[in-house]
Image (cartoon, rainbow, N blue to C red):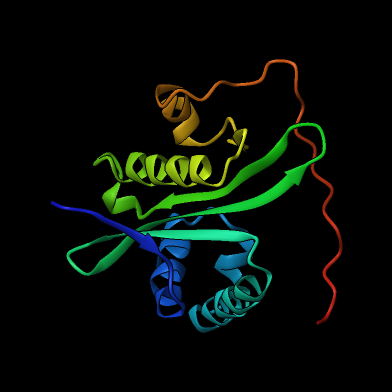
Length: 158
Protein backbone atom coordinates (compact mmCIF):
# COMPACT_ATOMS: atom_id res chain seq x y z
CA UNK A 1 0.00 0.00 0.00
CA UNK A 2 1.16 3.51 -0.79
CA UNK A 3 2.41 5.63 2.08
CA UNK A 4 2.35 9.41 2.03
CA UNK A 5 4.84 11.33 4.15
CA UNK A 6 3.78 14.85 5.07
CA UNK A 7 4.21 17.44 7.81
CA UNK A 8 2.05 16.80 10.84
CA UNK A 9 -0.97 18.97 11.52
CA UNK A 10 -2.82 19.67 14.75
CA UNK A 11 -5.62 17.31 13.70
CA UNK A 12 -3.07 14.44 13.69
CA UNK A 13 -2.80 14.65 17.49
CA UNK A 14 -5.42 11.92 18.00
CA UNK A 15 -3.64 9.50 15.67
CA UNK A 16 -0.28 10.22 17.32
CA UNK A 17 -1.90 9.61 20.71
CA UNK A 18 -3.21 6.28 19.42
CA UNK A 19 0.27 5.26 18.27
CA UNK A 20 1.91 6.21 21.57
CA UNK A 21 -0.70 4.36 23.61
CA UNK A 22 -0.50 1.29 21.35
CA UNK A 23 3.26 1.08 21.93
CA UNK A 24 2.52 0.62 25.61
CA UNK A 25 6.01 1.24 26.96
CA UNK A 26 5.60 4.79 28.29
CA UNK A 27 4.34 4.52 31.84
CA UNK A 28 3.52 8.23 31.87
CA UNK A 29 1.27 7.97 28.81
CA UNK A 30 -0.37 4.75 30.00
CA UNK A 31 -1.37 6.51 33.24
CA UNK A 32 -3.06 9.35 31.36
CA UNK A 33 -6.43 9.25 29.70
CA UNK A 34 -6.51 9.40 25.91
CA UNK A 35 -7.89 12.94 26.13
CA UNK A 36 -5.09 14.07 28.46
CA UNK A 37 -2.38 12.74 26.15
CA UNK A 38 -4.03 14.25 23.10
CA UNK A 39 -4.36 17.64 24.82
CA UNK A 40 -0.68 17.53 25.77
CA UNK A 41 0.32 16.73 22.18
CA UNK A 42 -1.86 19.59 20.91
CA UNK A 43 -0.16 21.94 23.38
CA UNK A 44 3.27 20.81 22.16
CA UNK A 45 2.23 21.30 18.53
CA UNK A 46 1.22 24.90 19.28
CA UNK A 47 4.47 25.52 21.11
CA UNK A 48 6.58 24.02 18.34
CA UNK A 49 4.77 26.05 15.70
CA UNK A 50 5.85 29.22 17.50
CA UNK A 51 9.45 28.06 18.02
CA UNK A 52 10.06 26.82 14.44
CA UNK A 53 12.81 24.50 15.74
CA UNK A 54 11.16 21.17 15.00
CA UNK A 55 9.80 19.19 12.13
CA UNK A 56 7.20 16.52 12.74
CA UNK A 57 6.35 14.22 9.87
CA UNK A 58 3.56 11.69 9.70
CA UNK A 59 3.22 8.61 7.54
CA UNK A 60 -0.28 8.24 6.18
CA UNK A 61 -1.72 5.12 4.61
CA UNK A 62 -5.25 5.07 3.19
CA UNK A 63 -6.05 8.28 5.06
CA UNK A 64 -4.81 6.95 8.42
CA UNK A 65 -1.71 8.17 10.24
CA UNK A 66 0.31 5.02 10.98
CA UNK A 67 3.62 6.53 12.13
CA UNK A 68 5.47 9.73 12.84
CA UNK A 69 8.94 11.20 13.23
CA UNK A 70 10.01 14.27 15.21
CA UNK A 71 13.32 16.07 14.74
CA UNK A 72 14.78 19.06 16.57
CA UNK A 73 16.96 21.37 14.47
CA UNK A 74 19.73 23.13 16.33
CA UNK A 75 22.99 24.90 15.80
CA UNK A 76 26.08 23.14 17.08
CA UNK A 77 29.01 25.49 17.68
CA UNK A 78 31.67 23.02 16.49
CA UNK A 79 29.84 21.50 13.51
CA UNK A 80 27.17 23.86 12.25
CA UNK A 81 23.55 22.76 11.99
CA UNK A 82 22.47 19.37 13.28
CA UNK A 83 19.21 17.52 13.60
CA UNK A 84 18.26 15.34 16.55
CA UNK A 85 15.66 12.69 15.76
CA UNK A 86 13.84 12.43 19.07
CA UNK A 87 10.95 10.21 18.01
CA UNK A 88 10.32 7.68 15.27
CA UNK A 89 7.31 5.54 16.06
CA UNK A 90 5.18 3.30 13.89
CA UNK A 91 1.90 1.80 15.06
CA UNK A 92 2.72 -1.79 16.15
CA UNK A 93 0.24 -3.18 13.62
CA UNK A 94 2.12 -1.46 10.78
CA UNK A 95 5.78 -2.26 11.47
CA UNK A 96 7.90 -4.12 8.96
CA UNK A 97 6.41 -2.47 5.87
CA UNK A 98 9.09 0.17 5.21
CA UNK A 99 7.20 3.06 6.79
CA UNK A 100 10.03 3.92 9.19
CA UNK A 101 12.48 3.76 6.31
CA UNK A 102 10.41 6.25 4.33
CA UNK A 103 10.22 8.62 7.29
CA UNK A 104 14.01 8.44 7.75
CA UNK A 105 14.67 9.04 4.04
CA UNK A 106 12.38 12.07 4.05
CA UNK A 107 14.03 13.65 7.08
CA UNK A 108 17.48 12.99 5.62
CA UNK A 109 16.44 14.93 2.51
CA UNK A 110 15.18 17.77 4.72
CA UNK A 111 18.45 17.81 6.69
CA UNK A 112 20.44 18.10 3.46
CA UNK A 113 18.17 20.90 2.27
CA UNK A 114 18.83 22.73 5.55
CA UNK A 115 22.60 22.28 5.20
CA UNK A 116 22.92 20.07 8.26
CA UNK A 117 26.21 18.33 8.90
CA UNK A 118 24.63 15.35 10.64
CA UNK A 119 21.55 13.75 12.12
CA UNK A 120 21.77 12.05 15.49
CA UNK A 121 19.44 9.95 17.60
CA UNK A 122 19.35 7.74 20.64
CA UNK A 123 18.09 4.18 20.32
CA UNK A 124 17.78 2.22 23.55
CA UNK A 125 19.32 -1.23 23.38
CA UNK A 126 16.16 -2.78 24.83
CA UNK A 127 14.07 -1.64 21.84
CA UNK A 128 13.17 -4.02 19.03
CA UNK A 129 14.49 -1.51 16.48
CA UNK A 130 17.94 -1.82 18.08
CA UNK A 131 17.82 -5.61 18.04
CA UNK A 132 16.85 -5.55 14.35
CA UNK A 133 19.66 -3.04 13.65
CA UNK A 134 17.13 -0.79 11.95
CA UNK A 135 19.33 2.31 11.98
CA UNK A 136 22.53 0.48 11.07
CA UNK A 137 20.76 -0.95 8.01
CA UNK A 138 20.02 2.64 6.97
CA UNK A 139 23.64 3.77 7.18
CA UNK A 140 23.63 5.14 10.72
CA UNK A 141 26.54 4.16 12.94
CA UNK A 142 26.55 3.48 16.65
CA UNK A 143 29.09 5.66 18.38
CA UNK A 144 31.25 3.35 20.45
CA UNK A 145 33.05 6.20 22.16
CA UNK A 146 29.95 8.07 23.33
CA UNK A 147 27.71 7.78 26.36
CA UNK A 148 24.20 9.17 26.31
CA UNK A 149 23.19 10.52 29.71
CA UNK A 150 19.80 11.43 31.12
CA UNK A 151 18.76 13.53 34.10
CA UNK A 152 15.11 13.25 35.02
CA UNK A 153 13.80 16.47 36.48
CA UNK A 154 10.81 16.66 38.79
CA UNK A 155 7.56 17.65 37.12
CA UNK A 156 6.54 21.27 37.47
CA UNK A 157 3.13 22.80 37.09
CA UNK A 158 2.72 25.03 34.05
